[in-house]
Image 1 (cartoon, rainbow, N blue to C red):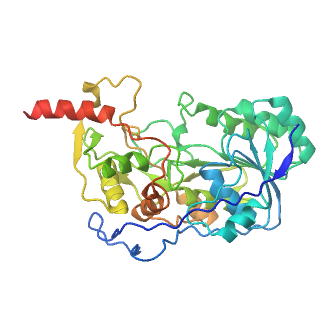
Image 2: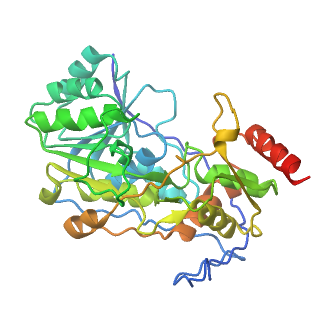
Image 3: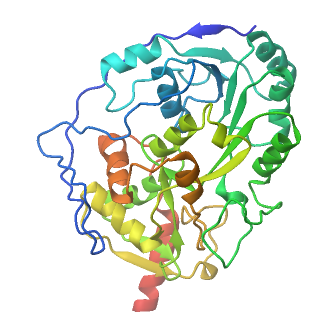
Length: 381
């Protein structure tokens, strides 16, 4: 039987020192913000503040890793009653790097837990209808069939806020992607697209957020971590083709902030918003940005033709080998949202609060790198 449990865990983390890193003159552009890491404790950006018109009883589907971790803190800090629906495989509350003991204790004393499997649709319907939540944030939903029981269980739901993906857009020569662009029903994110269609077909107040690539502390996808592993090992960075492919990254704290901003916001009703950083970056530029953020030397970049290799099921590079970026102007103009982090500063936040402390999700794997570099050496000899 499901229970709402107040989790009070008080693990403390040791203090840590940070590597020096200058953030000026990246690619010829002097950054306005200078972060100093010498002899002072790193103060993470992304202040936990959010304002909503009234306190809500909120359910977050997921919430124990990455986006949900930062979002749940924003919502609890603003006084909402927040419950995480998870399978219970991970602790509901863990102290974040850079988080004060006071803030952590306050959060862990208030966060609630509903344990269950969202694919057990009968359980979802019975447990959610018994609780009667006002708002649902669906952070980990992948298929429409997983969302329908939630809507059925909560006929008086005030708002359903969904984490979709910019990966739903149809590949195009005309960029950036706008929210009105054509979508690809055959994309690997088709389940998210079908969920958006379900929300539109139901009598529910919904908002859908479409991130591009997300990065930041606790990232479970090997985005910046892929580069940091190679930089730390002093290895060349293999990048497919020319390296001038343009992409876009958005910081997780900026994403969490916009999720909080759409709560109770009439301007967000039945709307889709692209969310990411304001600037676009090339693959080569991203490698240099990661080096700058972590205080590493200028990286050696090796370009290769992926068609000349068979990597089997292994993924040699963490990004799709194409231009891929989206406009965030709608979120800026309609919601008044603006990302707080520029790219190098955001990567520094990620590095200093995560990889630079020796924590990461995936071990370094240079097998595909060695295949690429081995062939490059043969061609050069």
